[in-house]
Length: 151
Image (tube, rainbow, N blue to C red; front, side, top):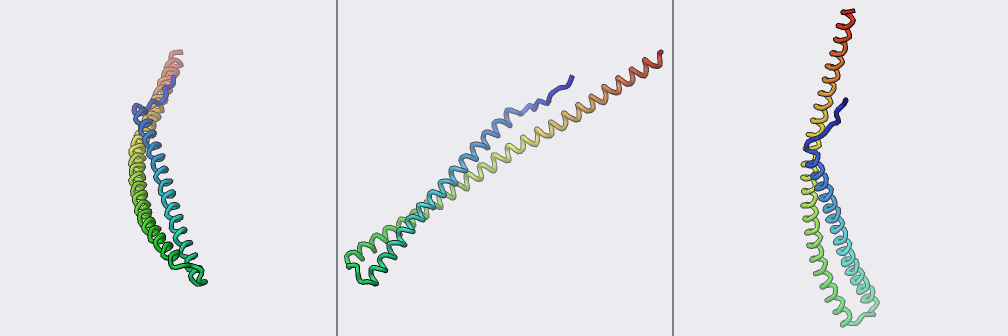
C-alpha cells in the first residue's frame, strides 16, 4: 500500500499562482497601454512633420497666403503642446508599467518560495517512502530466513 504525496500548503500555492497570473495580465495591459500612447504620440508628431513639410513646399513655391501660413503656425504650436502632453502621458504609462512589473516580480517570488517548499516536502516524502520500503523488505527477508532456519 503506497501513500500519495499530499502537500499541506497546496491551497496557498494555488492562490499564489492565481495572484501571479493576475499580475501578469495587469503587466500585459500596462505594456499595451504604453504602446497605444506611443503610437498616439507618433501620429501627432507625424501630423506636425507633414504640416511643416507642406508649408515649406507651399512657401517655396509662393502658393501660400500669409493668413494660411499664420493658421498653420498656430496649428503647429498646438501640435507641439499636444506632443509635450502626450510625452508626459507616455512617461506616466511607463511608470505604471514599471510598478506592475515590480508587483509581478514580487508575486513570482512569493510563489517560488512555496514551490521550493513543496519540492522539499516531496523529496522528504520520497526519502521516507524509500526508507519504509527498505525496512519492509528487510523485515520480510528476516522473516523468511527465520522460517527457513526452523525447517
